[in-house]
Image 1: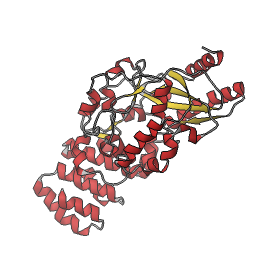
Image 2: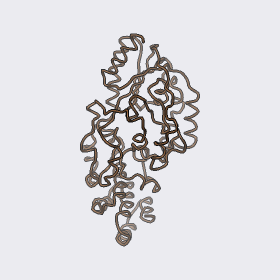
Image 3: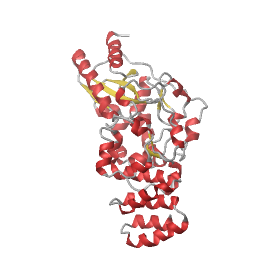
Image 4: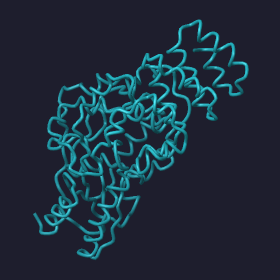
Length: 370
């Protein structure tokens, strides 16, 4: 191992990264072919930016032609929590483990910038850093670097640290000794595929985002198809099921990064409290959190679906109050939630009182079909 390669590993460890691997940048026609197939089938849903940046995503050398090497790093966000246990308490909401504290974009990027500045000083070569926001397909690149492999759920898995980790990438013009690519170790296991509540995997190694709870609760803006609402349970931001089911996560450890340790108030937040959040309250609760990105209305939409799935009639007053919410998506999900929580006579009475005064066509449709 070269002195530079060893020094990069030491710097990465000093910043709290769990692993670091290096790969030479080169075009990969197969990567573009797979992305093209995904987009052609419409499996990206409303994530139009994936199609708009497809050419750059398909070939990392287009993103920065002068770059020669990618340094790919893993930042653990594992928690001392059982992801499945929280699903049983229907009166509380479940937030994906990665979002239980600080927004990882800012945290990881800060660490990458410190390493990159040191590397630029040492090599006299230009650098760029990426954390999930650039048109870069991090997971295929990470597999080529040897950080892990894309499992049947399409997420990255490591034999050493499982899959509870973020990926950060540094591009540099410097030529650095690369690592060997990782190979697939899923074998005949289907745990991640079989546990998906909404059947989001048409086949091993294929994801249809339009059926994925993480996509539906985070990326999808608007009404969530009624076919998926019951399966969402009390998941209000993301879904960890396919990751939690993976046997390789027996090697995962809780993150040592204090800023990623779960905030107590977000581990099992009561739905009754969340339903009362206005925009200011939402922003205050999720300051510096990745959750703030989706906005209050989309979040309350998710919470209302969880309320409808709770079977808790004590939530009816909070849900009913949201029938007058300014956001149509919120009003629509309040209608659906009440249809689940009220008996037919009470819901029919409410429908007669409310539906004629509703101006939004989608909300009226919820009244008609609930």
